[in-house]
Image: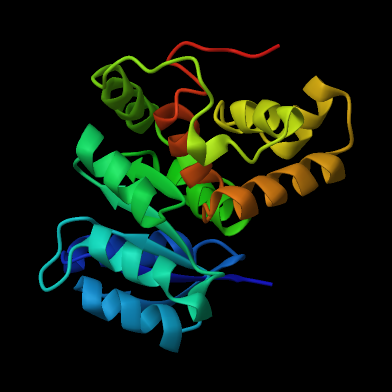
Length: 224
């Protein structure tokens, strides 16, 4: 089954380039183009999109606001947003993750990387470019030091769920987490699903931000 993609960017030339890029892939189907955030939100519904490739700076409604609107709509729960932007600054990265974006990538990324990113977020995984990850880390480092107490946002998680969350924050896949914890991928998937439910997060990208912001994972941290 093809991944239904909507491209949202106010630059017609870039939209055309992405249409050509995705059109060359058998599993990607561009089902709409939007020049504003408002159009992107409307197309998310009318075009039955799986992934919205979203710019940040657009007229009428920017990409962050459009992402938040999509994430807040229960009827669009299956739609994933991949932010594709020129501006990989910490404020944009954190705002996009909080709004519900599943991925964050620079426009100058390799075309093959952009294609992989669409497939990654469509599969329900998180994707942050190296620069975006550094932005998250920089934002966390700029915040006041936290206490060693478990924050309220994580208080309902079991010890195993906290362990899984820390590994998710390292951008490990379910298979990689399963290998590290010596459990089945299905068990990891169940843990991740329960963590999402307990924390109220939309997807793995938001879990990454939560893990860093709560202090569960600190920059440079590696489990195992």
